[in-house]
Image 1 (tube, rainbow, N blue to C red):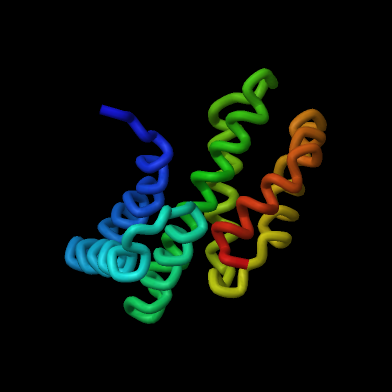
Image 2: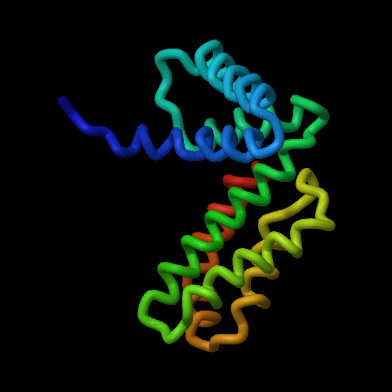
Length: 160
């Protein structure tokens, strides 16, 4: 039996979507999960799924369902997950505490509270990320080195 961790990795955003929606309503979580799976089954049968396709489907389902109520919550969660992962990797050998690293993701949550998820741009989020991490010069330099990667990841997530 062959293990394909790439395919399992594709399911992570779907799982996180379900959990975000489930925090508000179990029934809505089941409905959005069903909508996403049904859409994938109907439109991508016998095709290789990509991260971009999964994000596109989840974005469409969440924007459509309940007039986008859950989209901003899902997007905020996905951005926090990504930022926490990036900072953890970038700061692995720096003298930063877990509290400082987690604090960056917490600041992102606060920053996102008054943002319109549908109009958020990758450049806007990246600028926030660089400004927030400017407290540590080494971290700031590492972000600049990887800036194109982060921009690509954010564009994939935001669909822009």
